[in-house]
Amino acid sequence: MEIFESVYSIEQKITALKNSGKVIGFVPTMGALHQGHLSLIEIAGKASDVVVVSIFVNPTQFNNPDDLKRYPRDLQRDIDMLNNSACELLFVPTVKEIYPEPDQRVFEFGLLDKVMEGKFRPGHFNGVAQVVSRLFDIVKPHKAFFGEKDFQQLAVIREMVRQLNYNIEIVACPIIRETDGLAMSSRNMLLSENKRKKAPIIADSLFESFNFAAANDVEKTKKFVIERINASSELEVEYFEIVDGNTLQSISNWNESDYVVGCIAVFAGEIRLIDNVIYKNSMS
Image (spheres, rainbow, N blue to C red):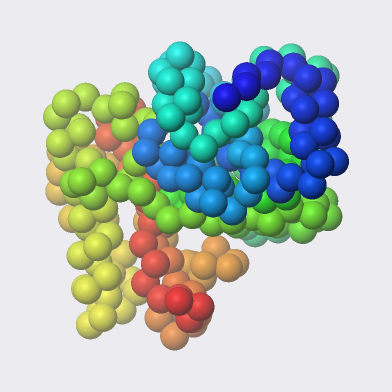
């Protein structure tokens, strides 16, 4: 695995690879890698000739400065993990490399970024679009791989690709879970022992709601999930929305859409965890 810190050096390398006909797969990360990231890299390795991974904690997508400070960082551990993966090129830029000048761009995603994460983390998706578009301009991949755990982010990135006319295939990859069901996240390592024990209630409630929904309406299903999670003294639901999987707009009955997803954000103390469950997908 080769490691690059400058935009110029990795651009030179990737240009040479593309000129030789190689298909470039790209997995952008913020480090603190886990098996979820490795699954993206594995999928990328099977679908590409060369896998590029970036590690960059992007300051413009954190609306809470404390959250940025708390975000786990362990570059050597990440490098050790990547050495045993399909990653061939690792890009580890500084903030100055990514943003030589402050990025003043403001993206317009209609209603996609106004709900759920966008509502509770104003400016978050604008920062995501800034950094992902910047990384796309540097790496110029043929394919980019993102986890379905960040369901809303995936929708926003697809819209950004459409708006900016990138010739990049966005590949959605399944949620990877711990053995107790908790969706893998870099934030999980910040949980106290007690909160880590309670956190699987989130996924368990979503899975239970799948069965509950078969005999109950949308509002009752939302209430079921929220009350079940909030019954734990260690957890507090910030939002749980049942939405159309394409528009991300809330639905009021199951027949409104052929693609129905439940998206949730839960606080375990100061640590914020997200997850989702697909209730209905006509494509599957």
